[in-house]
Amino acid sequence: MSVQRHLVDRIREHENGRFAKFLRSLLDGGPWSECAECADEFTLPSPRSEVLRINNPNGRTRVCGSDREDIEVRACKRARAESSEAAENLLQHIKVSANENDDALTIEIEAPKRWNRRGQVFLQVSVPRGLRVEVNAINGRIDIQCIRGTVIARSTNGSANIADVIGDIEIVTSNAKVACSCTCGKIVARSTNGKIVLEGHRGSIDASTSNGLIRVGLDAVGKDGVVLATSNGRIALQLPENVDADVDLRVDNGIIRNERSLCKALRESNGVVRGRLGEGGALIKLRTSNGSISLR
Image 1 (cartoon, rainbow, N blue to C red):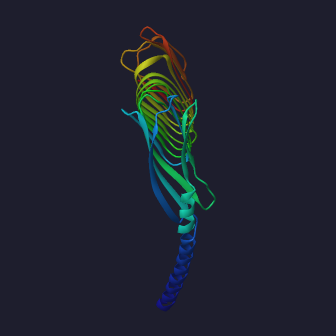
Image 2: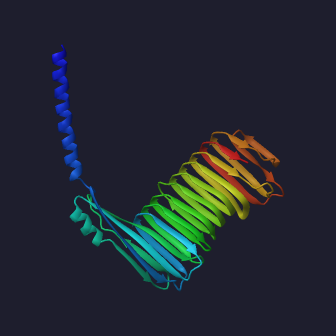
Image 3: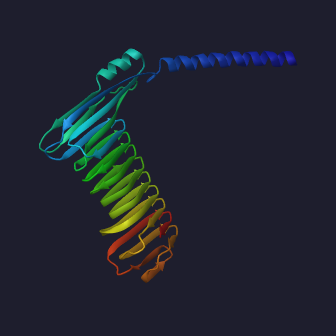
């Protein structure tokens, strides 16, 4: 019996070894198995239009405002391919260009791509604080901070993180998180499949997502109020202690937790709460189809 077990174990070891060799052969010559990278750095004069637009299809983009008059661009190019020669060749075809017209200064990334080859650029851009900044990404995270002007961030597959911005903000993501902190102005945020987290904001908010949590902490409510909506997810809103607003809360399948004292409160049903905070004024409208609403 022990001899049979020994033979079975030897056969299994042999088969496992053959399978491991097979996997290694696939990985050694497989797509994106080799990598090449290089760094590029240059400066640009601030645009006459005071608008900077960045189009980066693949790779993280970080924009930071500072007390400067020019624009500094640092680009880390990375290429992956089936061989080192192919990766080096792809690296040479990744381009970072800048063009200015009356509309904006545009930084454009071109990275050729095949099924077994991928190129991406990690951008770090330092700009004057007062510029209007627009970033468009397909596959990559967007980080923008320390801007004193309008910010627009659009990403298909990548999160957007905005911090320390005074100015109107527009964010659109398809499959990723939206986050803002220490901001002032009007925020318009949209996400198809991702949560939205806004903390330490002063101003108005219009935010919605198809599937995900919405959590908002306000230091001051703007005149256009707060509109939050999600199809499948929870909404949590924390207001400042003293606020004048009209409250309208509705949930289709879930519960409402209200920790604020409302004047002229009206509860039409278990899924609807209406009332007034202080003297009333700005509209606070929260909607979710499947989830709960928390007002604090």
